[in-house]
Image 1: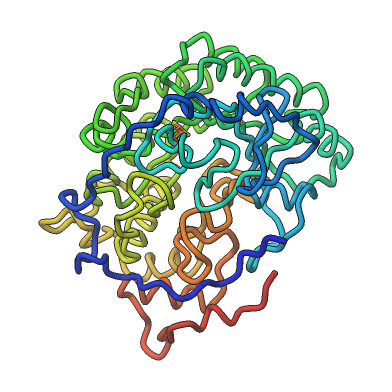
Image 2: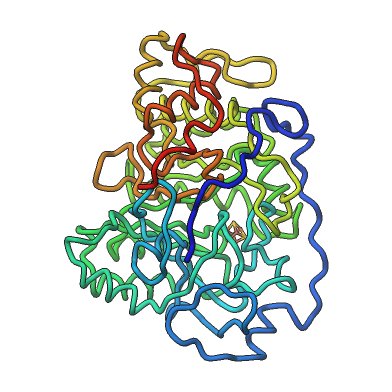
Length: 432
Ligand code: SF4
């Protein structure tokens, strides 16, 4: 049984370099090792060629079966628990509202992004279907079984959205279409809207158009790195990875044309060496184009090329979360904010009384992503504990309670008199 329980408290607030932000000079990935030829391209799994038997839970002690999309997809541990194909509980959440489906192949993702647990450089160490990704395992489930379970639940489905996550693989574009077809044959896209988390590197404008025509609602591009330099260092030539900043923007702008306003967006990871000003400039640019930003807090994923680097200090993260919410949902602009010499937010540009109302509502600090059925600014994609442990939550996958707000205010340096946060108070909350 999997249980996301509070772990030993990890220090937050300052990085291990003593700064209250992750400065560019320290956020350097290590170089990937050479992979022995027999382990390349899923060689071990293809050589053993074990037939899959239903749901596969990552297990490092048995031979990984030979599973491929579109017959198989992987899903987050939270989605597998919610779908009922895996037992477990999540700290303070009863379920996730987004069914994230990830394409899977023995060859895995052919890119090598420095912060990602799925990256190619891990071929020798761990088979693709056993790799951790955003801190958790991703069980593999036959796609027909996924569609069957959700179709059977009908209007009672706990899911508010389904998302297909593409990876960098020669078959990714055509298999995304087949997975989407398998889904829409059984589940009405107006009942459970569909998002596509794209892989621009292999895509054309026609691919974007086809996914829209087939009933997808929102199209997102995981830019991840907030500047071209960080992109190149963490996802491009710097780590022998094929991605290109211009190509990502080309597909993002195609999505704007084809999916339309509010129906496209980009992922941004905070704390990879960009300044707060740079990250928020990108947020503003996306809003000006008519789209949204979905934020992730950098976490040193085990086995990734950045696993030796510090988590994003919580004050940096909270400032960016709050400013991003103001820009994305409150019609505020970056030009009304002020920044210090390190590019950190010094003033949010609105009266404190107005800021207090937004902080106390808590929504700004929840996981950001494509909306579900509750409200436009509440993400269906709640990714429980995908960017932090329960003891030091970055993106809250549930509505914040009073103690959580006090903790966030403490991290922001905005505590109210008489309402201070005592370390560990929030860990005593009863599980949902
Ligand atoms: S393309 Fe996506 S899945 Fe592949 S290594 Fe990069 S971040 Fe990971």
